[in-house]
Image: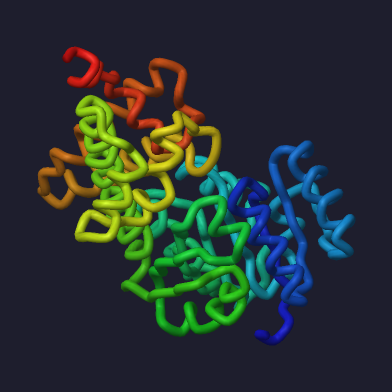
Length: 304
């Protein structure tokens, strides 16, 4: 286990809450803040029942004051700016020499802005978006892609290991966020193909379990196929990573691609299909609900 630290965690959502719990279980002294008092109370009760000691504050600044490392995991650029750069944000309260680690998925521009603001205050900063979803956070099996200096990451790595299965330094400030954009583009493309493949198998009257068995052992295999084929074929979408958040992430990816002069037609198409699912009221469903945008067709066997 890493040396015990005084850490603060700002943002106790479906990702931040479990990550904070892992920090407390690892023996770190933890102070937490969440904008929604109701969610903070939920986690306070859960951790108390487990015998974990987590202190709570009524502002990001108060949580950050004495921390060696401050972690943030909120919603988007605007949310992150509010809890870090705002009047009651963590940067104004952090002590000299402290470390800021942001696990939010935001734009690369926001990550660089935050790193510059932190550097001006003598605070090291790592942009460290995560992949693995709610299950990865709960099981301590997240993949973390990191931007910032090697020295800053070295200070954070041993602490993050309590909720990570992989931590990779991909480049300077903003690089972690750009890697996360690539991650989300890959997921979107795979789910697009998986949705069409399931609809094809259904329309042809194939046994869906046997089809999965046949193709998952070859080159088509993926995490999405292994974990979402059974749920997609059963019309189960009440778990995992919400479409609303995926669209936010894909928006950042498409904006960055445009800035770099790139064309991203597959990502743009899947993003539009997700927009249709949102418009039909499916924004809080798991990203695998992309398949609901593709209507079922009657199988050829039923026509014969």
